Length: 294
Image (cartoon, rainbow, N blue to C red; front, side, top):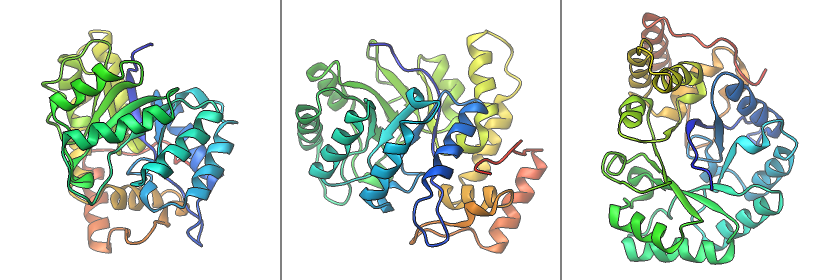
């Protein structure tokens, strides 16, 4: 098993005016940001509003995603609390030859490491031909992986538990496992993470920072002087002052109106917030070359 490395966006989802998923535009968006610098895209993560998208629409996209020219560059999320529905969606993805998954533990109920291990164990027993990146994001799931929990899962399932996306930031500096991918969830942690052995990032704002993030990644690997990292951090800091999904859709909608559609209860930034966002990014001389799902 090859260790996964690189710059991965948590891909945005594109919606029609009736708020149904626009499958073709969502895939085109993913393909475009790969071409702008991402090594791959995580489909149906938090940024993609996966928790709000009907399962039938997810299945429709997975079927169409098999035709993408970057089919091997995708990591599939599920965005589901139900163990049974998670397994069913993974089995469908598996049947379409997708094997890499980003799986967050269930939200809402309180539980600990023992229960988290049981949850992933049942998934792997049902879908053994899977490679799972754990998703550590206490703010959304209510559960934070401990180092011991990750170590136990890897020891139990060394072929299936292949990495972690760390958006709680308690693991990426301290977890040390051989042939295991660790991805901080923010570009502000990219360079620091690379310096201590992390694999890259999986992050929302790579939907718009793909080129900058890739330059930082490539310059690190080429041992070149870092001339882009501070701007990358500054851009990330601007976006994360707001709800990231709201800010990304608001920003992208300035270039292409199809991004204006967003699923309730989420919403675009208000006019004052939008002006503040755009002014701050303009001050950083930050623009996107081409957006995206045209």
